[in-house]
Image (tube, rainbow, N blue to C red; front, side, top):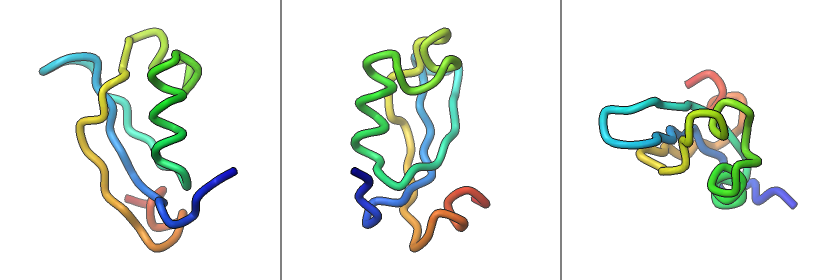
Length: 67
């Protein structure tokens, strides 16, 4: 179940100065868990982007996607 109080734009990385993945979600902590388990997206699983390196919280999902 989504926690709409944690709407965020975020970046995941595989290592320092490595590959970046940018996304937006209405439940940041669940989404990070999905990325860490390899089930977050095909891209993050392929490149091993499992480290949260940046996040920014928003009032609504459209603002998060736009950012």
